[in-house]
Length: 259
Image (cartoon, rainbow, N blue to C red; front, side, top):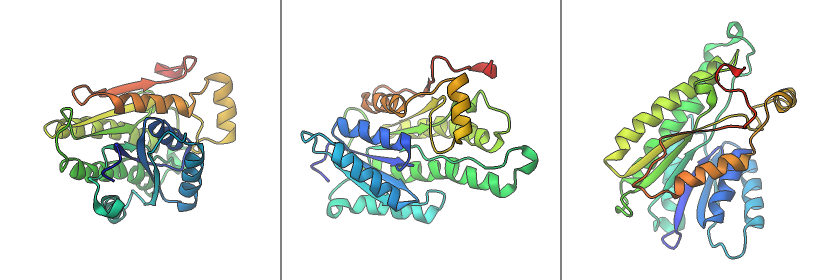
């Protein structure tokens, strides 16, 4: 892996936003690792990215399955990353914590403890575990351009403008905002930059067809590529600069108060 310019790990790599982020990184010759629970989906996205990649780009795509809500699975993931190319690499340079799920319960009355644990397990604990293991690898790198690595967490405008009946998801996005700020402080002395992006509406697997129709008609949507461009902008900054907190949303989308 020493021949590669940079290496980025994208959680939720089989989803629409994960794929768009991976494609943006590849365009800048940054190799990517896609991770998620469904290996078949990861391989499908990997194949598409490799087929669409310009011949002038020598970066590549890896797919490694992992359940990021489980500590042992995340530890194995980073062990596999460290073993790529015979262990000649130095691990990830960029981590994008993009994986996210929502509870299916419609109201607070129907929301169970198991629902909350499931959502927080992926959206918050999973992001923490990946950040912890990534920072371990990043700390082993030589300081270059003033830094050793960068972590970009994908939040949501729900963190400060929640929708009704979104307790589990909104709570997780509040939490990942706090996680991002704490990691930014803890990473600073090691040359590790941490920031968070809060997207507005993006079409994804988290939304039902009915939600997509309603929001498209009344609020509008970002393209996954719009979010990916924001991630890439953050990732390409010199380590002397960091975007701590970014909000990107459809120009037409209601914001504070959803009015």
